[in-house]
Image (cartoon, rainbow, N blue to C red; front, side, top):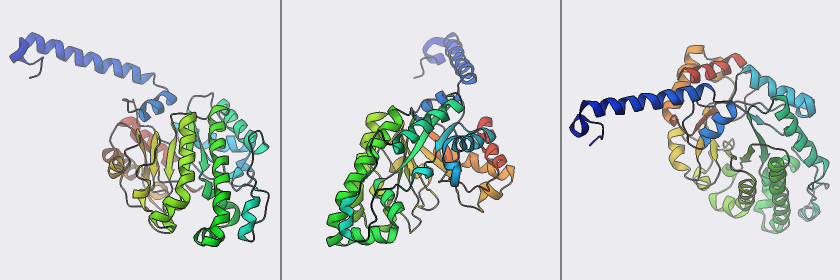
Length: 351
């Protein structure tokens, strides 16, 4: 029985309980007015009540916009123009990597030399995060993308050759030690970007799941994913695991089901897994992130304010109001109108 019901303590008890509830609501309302963006995002990830569901979107940049002050300016532009709650920094200027060798034959893999801590490769990205935080006066969380070990090899040497060598037993004995070395480099980079750069966390980008069978992915690629996850967990508690949509076919999402991160983010449109379903699929998380289709020509690019805001509300109904950060499935094309992104933020404020 409700302790405040008339059957327990009479109408006076009911009035006391009601007054307490109203006071609690007032306290939260007053607190919510002063909740800054950083607190909002961290509390959301921790499953605490927040004044507004956090939202963010991001771009891949090209050319000199991937370096130095130009890179910071472009990230700040979308952050401010769309009234975003946190920044996801892309690292395109440092991807691919120069591993110091041209791979023509399987034996060439043994000569791979990943960048080391203290190198310009590390220090430039550490400085980039520091400057990004300074540019926004450290008012919001900054998550920095680091790709998975196998993705670095794909980007540097090409999908066709890497996949062929990985599937060929004779070539695989040379490639896997190289992949192990790249995994060590990725793990060290993640830790340095958090500890020295001050990133809130790493946006860990895992992919290639759709091109291999579940057993192949688990045996050949997952060990380096695990290494990256452990390194991120050791350095900080707010890392986002991004499961990149299967552009070569649907991912075997169940092989990722036990991946660990404060937040899990996946492509619900390509992989056919709704926000509500993802809450159940991924138990080793505190929050989920996702929402809009990121591909050109979809609602976020062409929709009216009413339709975009209605879809915003629909995603909230699907995902729930706690432990949910709204975003797109992945990176937005440069022609998306920033006004449309602001409409999403406005809808969340109304909710």
